[in-house]
Image (tube, rainbow, N blue to C red; front, side):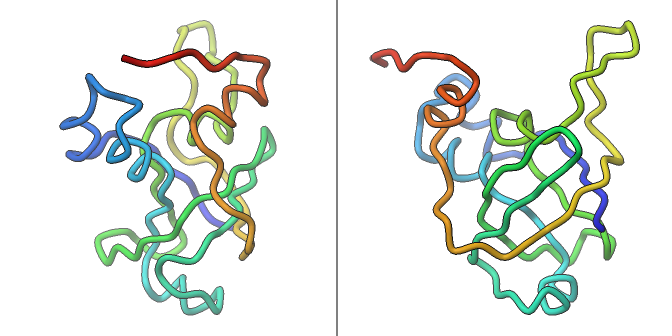
Length: 129
């Protein structure tokens, strides 16, 4: 069991006006994790992990980050994090983005694209400029 926290990254900030840019997609589909936790999972940086909560699951690429406390992961806000955070808002209009219990499992499956995630929820692809 791990604890998920979400938030923004500097890379996301650079691409915030271009969310279909590969740089945005790359960082938004990353699971940052302490290197010792990667070792405990018998995984290496860059491998794919399925992150599952009580509300859903998503496949992400791992990236080690010594700044994180052990037992926690960080996933940047966006379509990937939205698949695993709880939908409840406690009447505030804003869901919980911190302290979410999750399970991590190694997977050889590929990361989905933002489009794939949106289509899973009933959305449609549209052309970008």
